[in-house]
Image (cartoon, rainbow, N blue to C red; front, top):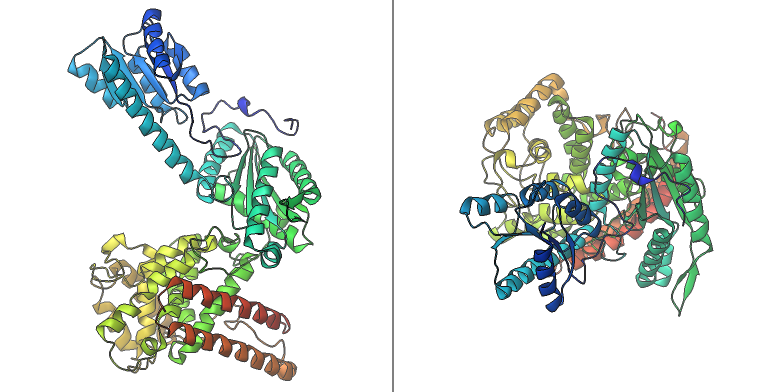
Length: 637
């Protein structure tokens, strides 16, 4: 492929990591760069390296050594200290200051034996210091030791950057590189483009032909995109069935042209293997940060995701670019949950959400199904969500951060699907063994949510919402500010709602008693700053706190005055249709609840495989409920 649709990446004078379509693999055959101003010394060292079957290149001055190090990426540099012009210490400093050469190990070779010289060399990042004349056996041992360490470091670095299935860059490293490229774009006033690629109807491929075929299709698609992209472009697995292509120095027009070529190529390519093949189609979202734009990496991803969302919603198998027309989307639309499901450590979170809305609605239905097991906890998640947002706003937290707290509050108790009913619904005091089971639910919640890329930032809030400020909480006993701020907010909101709600084992307390209890626990159970903000809001709300579940203005889908109910009849004349739909929904939830009861009461209720089956059953129920929900129009409030 030619570079006619791109600008030359070498035009930029800024030093950022040089990107590749795939993560660079560790060098199989080591290469040693020998740097010395004396040609006799170079010949001596290179001759010895040749005898022990190690390839080498040489440089006789500092600037040449730096240039070769950047272009060859040697496995090791043997560097003379005393050289005219730019000495070895200066060369070492220059190499360690550059990101693309900083991890190359350096062994100093020098006739100087004074300790200060050795200390200075090692302090600059050298891995060893050998004095001349050297013993050949000692030199070999030290060289091979450095090469083994370098090979291991390269392998670990590649694994940390690589998606195990496709061999592309993984999601985590994708964001790291994208942030570097956004900064380069900003400093150089050069465009940066991003393409998000989504396999259309990929769930059908997996369900019909099996996940092995689905994996093969995904790998083949990644290979095809790499063939079309430039060496300087960057291809990553962004989500479960989403790939991303970062295009430095590329305008929106040229990025769209590449996306159209990828769409056409993918639609004409037969995927599969020798035993079975199939045709697929893809949707593409394209966005660009142009000269002068001040957007972030996250903003660029959101723009491309908005364009992809439009492509998927307008018929699939097409390319859409982000324009200003996408901006008026409702501010309460949760952009954080727009990503596809990412690689899962297990199948426990196999909800195959295809968009941010479906993902959050599916998780919300799971929360409601969980609450159906315990009537005393009805509306608990909504209440905690409301109190948490109010506290966070009073503390002046950023809107994005408040949204994450809101999501975490909605899902904070989802791990109770792993707590047996005999424990969850017990009227009396829990036995120590039963209490240990109950204390598992934040960990189970975090395990479930941790598999969803769309909720990656909320996991820590959910995991630690039962920690105490004095360090006596669970699951990890974190003290004070070591507890994430979102978890500290959830702790107060969760406790206030629990105190003011009826439970099987006790009656609720009134407003005054609840506020007094929260205040008395400031500094021990709760963060004093959070309690202070809570008390301010509670005072301003007056007798409206604790809230009436039917009287709130917040909702699972958003705020801004929408109803707290998921489904509401459009007008009172639709009562019959609504009742019929409501009955069918209740029947579906009842069936799901029975499945929960059967699985969580088994002897292996804490086993993640059991949780996998639970969520799989929910996914099927959620799909049915989504269809039912669409049959009843929502009421405009």
